[in-house]
Length: 100
Image (cartoon, rainbow, N blue to C red):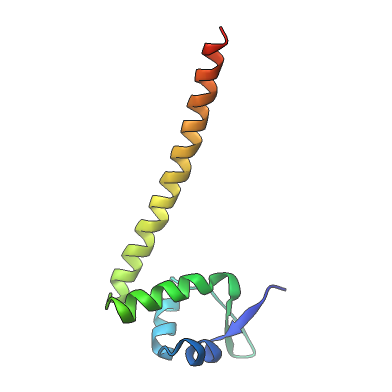
């Protein structure tokens, strides 16, 4: 089983409101596991929580804004990956023609 941390521990450690955490879950920005009525976040998702908390508390970005920014960054990352793939294919094709 992967490492995880409870919602209550997160609220205490990161000094965030429990309603903020729950709203992130409601917006689909965080995926949680529930066991014995305890909400858990996987350690691998902590960077997302930290990012959302910084945007929300430090930059005063509201929850719909967090969702938009998060989705745009995911799309940008996917486009960057696809661009790298295409550049690698183009480079391979270019190398083939240089050998001729």
